[in-house]
Amino acid sequence: MRVLIADVFPERFLEDFRSMGADVTYDPTATAEQLPDKARAIDVLIVRSTKVDRRTIEGAKTLAMVLRAGAGYDTIDVDAASERGIYVANCPGKNAVAVAELAFGLVLALDRRIADATSDLKSGRWNKKEYGKAAGLKGRTIGVAGLGSIGLAVIDRAKAFEMRVLSWSRSLDIDKADALGVERCASIHELADRSDVVTVHLAQTKETRGMFDATFFARMKKGAMFINTSRGGLHDEAALARAMKERGIRAGLDVFSTEPASATAEGFTPEVATLSGFVGTHHIGASTEQAQDAIAAEAVRITREFILTGRPPNVVNVETRAPAMSEIVVRHYDKVGVLAHVLGIVRKFDINVAEMTNTIFRGQKAAVAVIRVESEPPAELLKEIMELEDMVIAVEAKRAS
Image 1 (tube, one colour):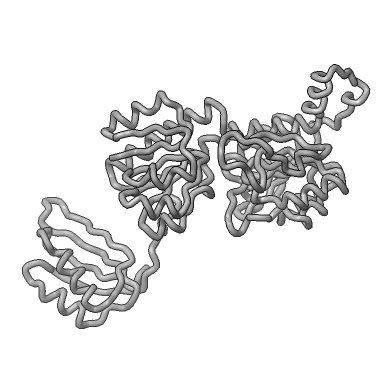
Image 2 (cartoon, rainbow, N blue to C red):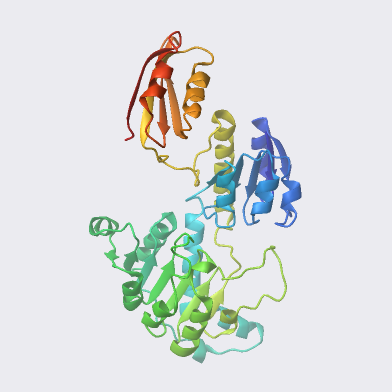
């Protein structure tokens, strides 16, 4: 198994990959442009921030799994991977505490104007009169958008600050809100209406891209804080800049709508970063040693299971239940070539197989194959399978469950 780690990764974990028999190449400076060549003859590709595009996936003839050493996987062309039968897996929940800590760091920095005060001190200016003004967090209302592991970690920390917690999530109902000790909002706009701070913890998908737009920012209280440590595409950055200038909205961002592809770059000057009421970091929410160690250990676990079983955990691009109209249930003798003959007959009738399982009984004399197919099999197909007398015990077709 040839493994390429094309990103920064805790080096002390590399031996864990080698101990399972993997041939590991560690290339922390690899870029998206270089990846098509570097990934051409590997089986497993592990990345953190490096983008994996269609060129890389289509050029990597032996690639079987792309593993994102983190939670989000929007930097990977999942559609291209799915078209080639390549698993895409991730490491969800391992960076939750790190991101939640940063989110609150941004809140505190905005409330107490820490960045501006530090800048003045470095310039030799003492201005206690200006910086001795802050609302404070106790008793203020924070709205949490998204209730994954990070959102839940933020809620725990908000309660420690004695804040009132509102939340919105598509999966949040009244009973779950009560169990979490939060108030449920019916929409993100209600969250905007009622919150002094809105913090975003959602995956970036086609449905969530641009969700926090001009309408959302117009609903926020004047002077309220908007925190995004998830993905820059979730918010409309131009609309946020207008809200900052016109309504005094304050922004704490770890992510931006456009970010440099490399770890370092010059000339990155998004408009929001030039405005009053802004604090920002460099998409480093998960970048604590604790989080990176936890993610590295999870990447090792996923790779080990993939090597042992052929299927990794935490796969994000496999149908949980492949769509099928019918099931062909074949009770058969456990002999070499039985399933090949059966599938040959299914192919002869031009019926596509969506999914198949084969359960072997104790003693390895007999087995049951369940073949889920996309159309109803004709009686002639079942008859031909049953005519494999020395191979097949019984066969039936039924509607897929």
